[in-house]
Image 1 (cartoon, helix red, strand yellow):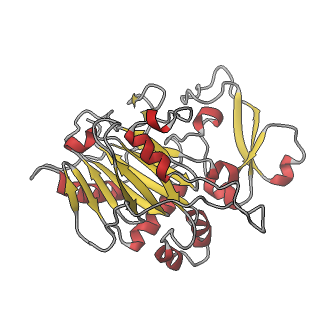
Image 2: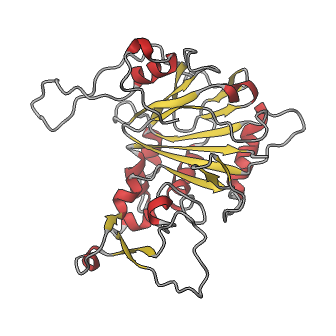
Image 3: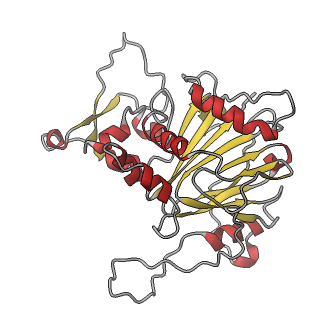
Length: 334
């Protein structure tokens, strides 16, 4: 899924990989600039990128549905806040579990300038073992203030760095990335009811009449400038006739929809905050990915969020989303 083809010349790359390379963010190291510290972006031709912004209706083809502006501004803001505060909370797992085990309140700790430090575990043999198998045995991590860190000699990482390195969290049934399947034995909570109801409503165009979508798992992806999601298939669910419901939040992105082979040239399209994509049936067999997040102020197209997130505690969410994109994709597993 995240494999590299950097050593191949263009003649050896697949059509999908060529498209990824075409739209990926690159910097021009040879560009002349008075301010050498300011990197210059290499220009990219976006004339072939489909733009559904001005056509406010559902577009669908072979199980792929594009629904522009499906989410209200208020709903977008609420989901951004939940994605940063609630969704990464244990027992939900994140990419940080592999090193630090379950971490609570990363967003709040970053806002307060705290630091995560490693210390010896206080668990004794008679106590319950840690059920999170990714946590390093005999070690625990906790947040403390910067002043407290200065009095210790221990491994540490700032909460703000952890927040910026947050790449994914999983809701509902937990996905085991090492085995590429859903591990029903892992502790988990059900997907929040409000998100379930939203997914059920959004999934209707891709569902047979009289059949209701059952949200059982969700993966939340967090993107910063320069981050990509390589071409892949979402193929671990039992019934591919049921859609994946994908919600876009934050900065604009380029989405690639290919065919059943990486050799099939993909379509490129813009995804904006509030857009929804459904992939069901034949579309589930198509390679897809995100080669670029557009974070510059002129083109990110998040003015509606900047207008909404202007009061008090909302400013910390605004600061994050001004350079980031969040994608929530909800699935029926069985």
